[in-house]
Length: 116
Image 1: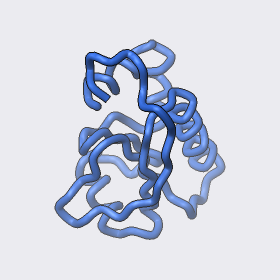
Image 2: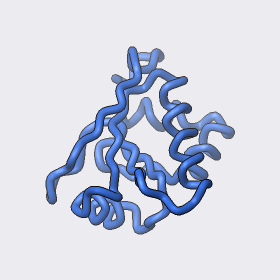
Image 3: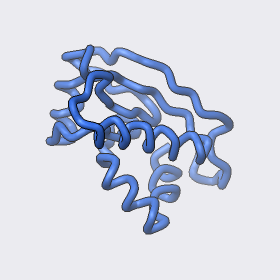
Image 4: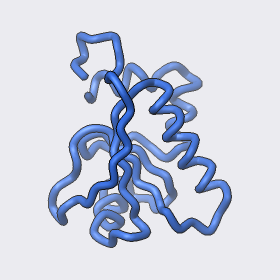
């Protein structure tokens, strides 16, 4: 999405993807774990997906439980292992709690439109 457009992407797209060791995926990316020990992590992952779908943003899902390279890349960029995490073209946006705070402060759309 260009910064001159006020409308978000046309439709949500959740596709699983596997990043290469040195490459970070373009666009919106949610790093999550399909095998999570906590109910909060599962709920936060669903809520983050729902938020982006509601706003009609395209995004990729990357499962760090099944992808060691992705997990290492995510942790190196974000400096945290808390899941889920939202990135835009390699820029760490935040964990779900941080993204939700941006949404409540009405700052999320502006940040995403600047980066997409």
